[in-house]
Length: 558
Image 1 (spheres, one colour):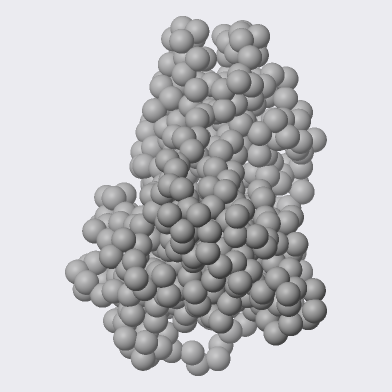
Image 2: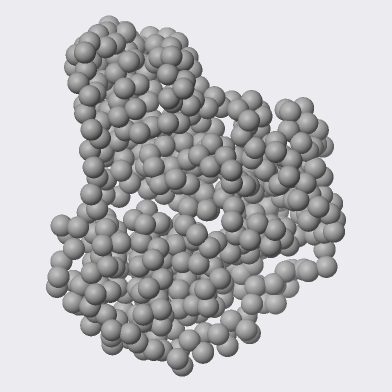
């Protein structure tokens, strides 16, 4: 059948099973938006307040569902406003397809109104980016984009389409979507055999779980491995939920703000089994001191990650779920009773703790977990609140924490929460942010109200850029350069002005009622929690220092 380029875009989206897109219209993409209007009963479009919010929403949708998130924007500033969201998805290996439209072919390269080379701009932060100038290539380009976004190590793809292509006509032939199969051809038998030998020889093993375990769907295999070989487990920020936070073998997060137990166990272990981790500097600290008594056994889908940051003594490259399935078929049960007992004693001696009598971020997080039973989707922005969430909320299932791990994007969380809530309207979805982060994208509260997407925002409002201030306090002689936000901003009034419910919390005793009210409100809610500006996140290991040297309130005079 002969269709216009815009019709081909919609038909290709339907081919791929896309039912939700996020975006913001403009001149060059009008033809596609006109077709979206005609297919509103098949593809739901969520209009955000800013293109960056749309990109974060598509990212959050992808993280929560495991499907490809889709975002659309017009040319020029519309397209460039997607860049931060695309980079966020790229750093965390999140499958997303971004559609932008550009000026007509005859206007390209002439500094035309709202012309920008968005395919070139995003080349370093996408798995693939291209511009479609010929309608005969349109359908194949879209299909290729979804295939690339989902295959191997997932990530974002950008397709830029000139406006004349969206208006032209061409023969369209429907196709079934390409079935992306797990990457297994790189899983070598000799590597698995070596892994078995390394695991059998270990007396003090530790399992380190990253985002790759979530991307591959290897949750059951990770749990089975841990209990089969009786090994304690720690995780990265991106790996939260791949191993249940309430499991007796779980030690907490590793790294700069990881638990002392997790950091000390990696320091003392004789085998570190890395499952889908890229050994970020925030996890390893000083690399030359990281797990220096241990052999490292690394599982990853991307061969480029092997020996990139930490040298591995053994490695298995390929889909993690399939790799672990094959490994488990070869592994006999083992017990490491003395090692587990040593870790549990250390955990008793060095628990996470905070100032219990007053209102603090950790208390709010713990109360949120208590009221939700872990059955909620939590997004965060970036900063102290993000680390408190990782430390004090026990993530029991994968895809329930949405957070910017690699890029550290302030303002990410609310858009991500909108995307997750659009995917799961019957689930409670919370975004936990600081007041600095909330200022960056709080305009998306309007988007939630307009679309009937009932996100609950918890603002940890200490009137400072908390994490930056913490560094200034500890390492910069208390010179608080441009981190104080005492500007009289009233988030409750702002929430009400945007059509949401605003709630203020100033005392510990008000937290439970505020959360219960928000969960029962059936509308977007903003809870403004007033915290002390000098609250800090502990434990903490200074950047570039060994993580086993992490200190807390008992170790420093504040």
